[in-house]
Amino acid sequence: MRMRTPLLASTAALAMLGLAACGSGSGSGGSDDGAIVWDMWSGSQADTDALNETLEIVKKENPDVDVRLQTAPWNDYFTKLTTNMSSGNLACLTSMNGQRLSTYADAFEPLTDADLKTAGISRDDFAPGALDIMTYDDQLLGLPFDVSTMLVYYNKDLIDAAGAPEPKIGWSFDDFEATAQGATTDATKGFAVGLGEFQWMALPIAMSGQQPVGEDGTLALTDPAFADAATWYSGLVTDQEVALPAASASDTGWGENQYSGGNAAMAVDGTWNAVSYLGNDAGFDAGMVDLPTGEAGSTSLVLGSGYGIAKGCENKEAALKVLGSLVGKDAQDAMATSGRSYPARAESQPLYFSSLDKSVRGEVEAAFDAAFADVEAQRSTKDWDKVNTALQPDLVSVYNGQATMTDVLGQTQQQFGE
Image (cartoon, rainbow, N blue to C red):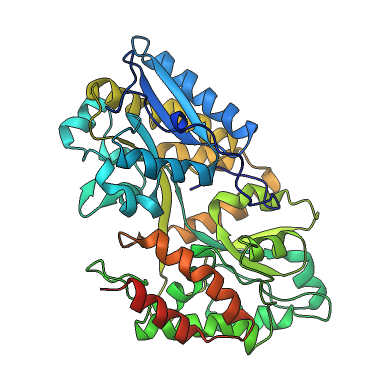
């Protein structure tokens, strides 16, 4: 999961930093002077300040280890990570988004029970499903620092003014359609479709009970149940007319920005933006609920990010101890108390809700409890990033009625499927 950033910020890539921002400098996962380098993305100075607070906790718990934090903007981070992975120049401690783990899996050292013991970590420390975030091909390749899943966020003011039914935990897709239709007026739409990976896939997955990757790890965009649900999703624009078509493929946060700007009554986004929506600049009263339940039951995915140890790290024991501190109680408590992210460590999670205003605390906790109640691990292919990069501009064509969802899914399946 990305650390929380302003929702309306430009998605243009920031100026590239030098390759050293993600590299270790020695080509062996460490640094020339033996320091343990920790690479992490950062979207703002506030993010960097928060990371430095975590770094101070790590240093306090590991006084004999020289730990150094290096950051790069989100998009730049993964661009440079690809370059450094090919040259064997990864930092000992490399941060990884779970949705991208399959692409970079070969860069990480699998963690054994002995490694966890050295790190001072137990599998039982983590919330149910959290370790799936950093697991690929049945190997634990790192430890998660946060967990997330997708929610439906809604504008209580718009829904109330339109007289539409307010979303409720445990609702159905019929309920969702009733709210979307009832909240659609001459001035606003009932829903905002997404372009981002799970901003648009979450509802089709929930409706069909099928992920777009099979249990055997092969691409399954044309699975009949998923494809039918994806067609229903695009039909929210073209058939039901409860959502606007996306303006262009460059508007990567189209749906989220339509919602946060007060132009749509509902949108799907991750739990990581709960605090941002509650304090939205438009000033509306925001609510949140779990995804609607489909005929196959409640299907949602556990997402998040973590830290792994790069293959070739020369001081693995020190790196493991630092890793243990990064996901240890003090670091996780600090993250939760700040409200920045929902921690992966189970005992730290209640502190996240304590950080919220009392007026919304109960509602947010209830929504999170419902959303995380029955999550399953996300499945992805080795070229999952490329799949989503190819899909995004085509989604704009689908929403604008220039292509069908069936054709787009079929073409992408043919291009990237086995």
